[in-house]
Image (cartoon, rainbow, N blue to C red; front, side):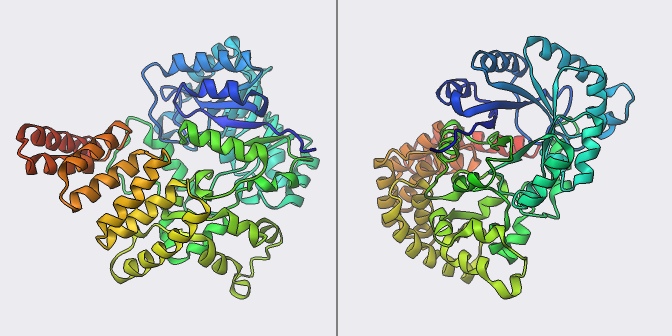
Length: 465
């Protein structure tokens, strides 16, 4: 009989998550959510609503009613200039005490200075080290234990070094948590600067014109796309390797919508998954790919191979072979003849995959984009319409349908689908400019101007300093 496993999940700033907690209460250990930006920045650049402090109160109350642990994130890797002020953490610690009185159970902390100070001032609260502490050694783990940590979240990079994880657990005597589904590169050279950038991007000094972005790793993938298989995620079917010695399992879900959180939870709860691996992994850099066939990974004994990997890539060639079989690059990132070649390949691969995964939206999107590249509008309309018949009518599918109808100069259908894309959350100014052009072609000048103005305003908001 399969052992019941519980998971920590992240709050995605959608209060509908509280209903999901009811549905999965027997499989959710904890819900983690960030401290309000007025107290500390975050390891994620996500907008917080005007009543976010009120949302936190509701989350804590709901979690306690379901016997789920509410966890406050203090996971920024840099506090900037304000972190240099002697009394900077005082208000934050006062706020933590207020939340504790409301039922807050755990806090997850990156800064070791805060760990020791919180432990000194708040004796009876559970302190977890953040995954952003980058714990990779017994010595590092021991230091954090001495500072007051109760639960160690190990660095993602050692997720597959089972002997080392066991050694850390035995040496410290602390409980261990691992993050299962983050898809960041192993030993990524950009990680520290990336998280520092994210920490600053939630402050008033943030500039949208920064040279930094969430897509540093494109540089690496563009040269070695097979590196994606080095990402140290733990597949759902591999939980059995960890259940006997890992105490807590964390899912990275703060940027997932509710259906995706549900899909991720179900995959790890059932310890099996089929289809596009990108659906359950979290990393912006993975958008370099449009599809990764998890079934192909399982067929090639992927996880067992990774556990035994000796890093002898020059002779092994396993990941490169797997790339050919399992991964499809997001061809919109390519140019010229290289894109022509990859899109032609994508059409063949996606058409084959569609037979195995007829309800996988990424396949329809990838196939439609490839058709569009070759201006095969009718073929793209046919495949996207089929996606709609399976209720896969997300914003991207509606947007692409609108683009296709513009291509065949069916402006009424183009307008209908582009409007649906907007309603479903397609926020790019591109949709406004396309709508403006369509309205202009059917002599609806006022609507054309309104969409044009809206698109220009979106661009201004993005570029504001």
